[in-house]
Image 1 (cartoon, helix red, strand yellow):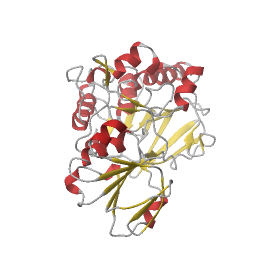
Image 2: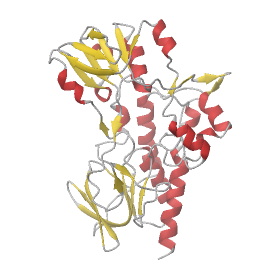
Image 3: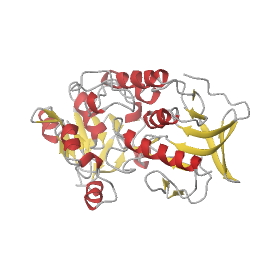
Image 4: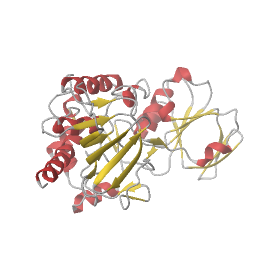
Length: 356
């Protein structure tokens, strides 16, 4: 990776986040005359992928997992695991010599006199433009019900789950029926009794249809790139996320039991919305993540905890977001499709530069 030094701490663009979105916009910026830096909170590129559960694989095949300028190095119809993704991101940053600072968690972002001040734990940087590319997986969300289980019940968020061997034996309750929850339940069912608690049942889609990857069809039909502002886009977004490759029927065959929404707990007993109870030994909270923009002190940019933007551009000139779910399309937060929004944001950055 090229040097990210700037003697006076001043850059044309600062990118906050060195994940897939940050690297994608970095690729575009590296092809411009702008002086920029990518700030990554962790000590290595790909860290957030490498630390997820051991058996995690993408639900998109490798042909749809590449960032701008570099295809994913795997047979197109295979499904990379999380370590392959982490390795790819690290190689990508090195191949394009992107200026990245590791261990540079941003603690504050302010806007004064037409420029941005970016504070990390160790320094203060200044920039004319900023891209917030911290991604959708920021703070694990755990409901307050965690405190009502007996301390003898082992509890962890899916962010801290790695494999069945690390969990104590016993009946395991997985709370959450999304992709993570069902994949973890499927894995655990081979060695223990597993119960999945979920409220709404998301639509389940097969990973392959007529011999083709699901995302081949979604791309071919144009669904993956339907704008969120269109009538169809609003309908698709309103239906929520869909589950890929894991189905209720498959898990039932594996011995997984399903219960409705978890509404309470006392001791070792979980209480469900239909009035039934169940004693459990382990609880895995596959309840997703929440964004954390508490470090952004720029007025009118964050509303009710979420960015206010139009395809990543805020009303504050020079401040952008990238990698958000449904930022523009269903693919906006996915590894192989974030490139579309990255190109758009890069064009906005270039236009602002040229207008000076």
